[in-house]
Amino acid sequence: MRTCVGTFFVTLILTTAGLSAPPIPVIFDTDMGNDIDDALALAVIHALESRGECRLLAVTITKDHPDATRFIAAINNFYGRGDVPLGMVQRGKTPEPSNYLRGIVDAKDVHGQPLYPTRLKSSDAIPSAVTTLRKSLAEQADGAVVIIQVGFSTNLIALLDSPADHLSNLPGKDLVAKKVRLLSVMAGNFAATERTKEYNVFIDAPAARKLFAHWPTSILASGFEIGRVIKYPASSIEHDFSYIPHHPVAEAYRLYDKMPYDRETWDLTSVLAAVRPDQGYFGLSDPGEISVDDADITQFRYLSGGKHRYLTVSPDQIVRVRESLVQLTSQPPGRP
Image (cartoon, rainbow, N blue to C red; front, side, top):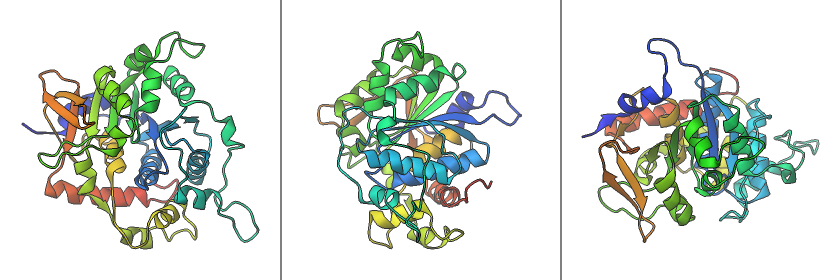
């Protein structure tokens, strides 16, 4: 049995039937720099916030390179939200530099000034991801927060393992159970065939294994097979961002690979499903449990009352999702 996302998760997101829902408080956990879809996904979040659909509480980073924080700070500032708190992974799994991160953070205008300025004084001043996560959660209403994880599970496992502190008298797992309503992850592979291990899982497989086993709230997974069939068109990069001479997201896309290329929308799908659960963009599996086997491949076991589901998508939905993602990603800053 497959159902529409809205029939299951709308009750997690919308609290008052028939009335406009308040913006969903979102934490974005990303391995920004390892692929370009993270940058596109962050642009989608900013567009949805400009439309009043979500509110970006914080961005935490599992890419262990200072350019990742500088890049995210520049993107947030470009969209008029340069004060969004950041948090950095401790001992992350991918410390390698990224060509698109460096190309953006080092870009200069004709006067030698940063082309994409930030409010960030130094990457060294960024607190740990756990600190940022605990602070952001403690400040929110119970059962309010949606976390969108589109990288590795390193930060969220560190959060679960964190002790009570001055930010909250609850240990991490209890704090998550109290404050989080949904975890939307881009992770795993749930295709009927060709089910290989997926990057966000196997890079930190122990963390992913522990996340699916011990995370206390509902989990919605967008598998590799979803973003693979919904590609962001190069034609949008070439035409839809021309409202400004220099756009950091479009330029990062050009730096990531040789143009023109259409890139998979893995991370973007997790954002769309989390913030717009009731608009029929995706279908859902029946409830069950996700696990990670000894080969680092995700497995799904159907279970009545299970807290885990994964996305499905039909040919018609592929068209709708692609159109919506292009519109949101290319939306000018501050405009609905």
